[in-house]
Image (cartoon, rainbow, N blue to C red):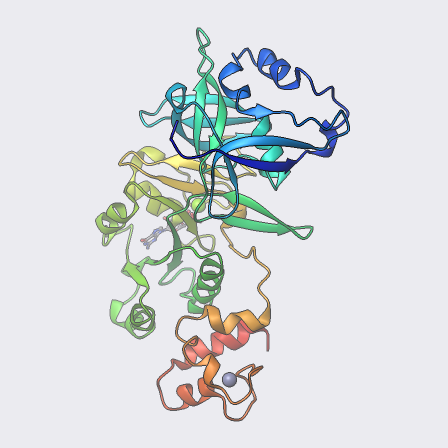
Length: 374
Ligand SMILES: Nc1nc2c(ncn2[C@@H]2O[C@H](COP(=O)(O)OP(=O)(O)O)[C@@H](O)[C@H]2O)c(=O)[nH]1
Ligand SMILES: [Mg+2]
Ligand SMILES: [Zn+2]
C-alpha cells in the first residue's frame, strides 16, 4: 500500500443492487466465490444512509486521469495479467508466463464501471487473485488498470469499448487482387486517427506490381509521417520488418477481405495457422468470435482478431471533423476565409488553394470530399 492519502469517492449503485440487504452483501459475494474477502472488503464501507442509500463510499487510493476510480487492492496478493477474451461473466486472463486463468470480476468493479456492458474487455491489464483451486486456474479480477488506445463502438448512443490498450492498427491493403484502393486506406486512417490510435499502412502483394507504380501514392503517406510497409507474403519481402514491428505490441489488423491479412499473420508467426482465402473468422474450426480476442504471437505481443473490426467503419464521424482528421489538410483548415468552410465550393478556401498550387495531394483532397460526404 502506498503512503498516498486515500481518497473517498462516492459512486452510484447500479439500480439492481438497491433491493439487496446491504449488510454482508459483499461478504456473501466473496463467500460465494470461495474467496476470503477480508483484505478487499476492508477498503469498502457502506455509508450510513440506510437501506435506500444508492451510494457507497469507496476508499480508493487512486483516480485515473480519465476519472476512473482504481480501487485499492492488496497488490501483494495479486498477479498481473492481460485479458485475452471475455465470455459472459468470465474473462480469460493470461499471465506473463502464459498461464490462462478463468476469472470472475470483483463486484465493486461492476459498480464503478460507467459502462455496464463491458466492465472488463479484451486487452485490459488487470490485477487478479488466484482462487487457489486444486486443479483449475481460476481467479477474480480485483482491479483494471487505466485503459489507453481503446477501440469503441457506438450503439444506442453509448460508447462501448471493444478492446483496450492497443498499440497500433495495421491498415492492410493489397497492391493488386483486390485492386489497390488508397481511398479505403484514407477511410481507415480517418477512423484510426479519430480513435487516437497509431496507424501503420501495410501494402501487401507487391509481388504483383512494379513497386515504382505505388511510389507516388505511398510517398504521400510517408510524407505525412505515416509508417508505410510494402510487403509480400509470396516473396517474403518486408515480413521481417513487420514481425519486428509487431513484437511485444498489441496490434489490430484491419483491411478488406482478400488483401492477405491471414496470410501475413501466418507469415510472421506460422504457429497461428490461420485459414487463408476464407471470408469470415480468422480461426480454424468452428470457433467464431463475436467479441474481440487477443491472439498471442510466439515472438511476444498480440494481434486482435474480431470479425467486426475488419471493415473498420465503426465510428460516427461528423462531417465537420473530417478535415481535422486528415493530417495533411489539418494545417490549412483554419486559414479559410469562412470559419465554417467545407472546403468544397467556397471562395478563399486555404485547402483548395493548397491543392491548386500542389502543396496538397489532389487524390487525398478528393478522398476528403468523398469521406466528408459533400
Ligand atoms: N500474389 C500474392 N498473393 C497473396 C499474398 N498474400 C496473400 N495472397 C493471397 O491472397 C488471398 C487472400 O489471402 P488471405 O490471407 O485469406 O486474405 P484475408 O482475407 O485478408 O485474410 C489468398 O489466396 C492468398 O494466397 C501475396 O503477398 N502475394
Ligand atoms: Mg483472413
Ligand atoms: Zn476551406
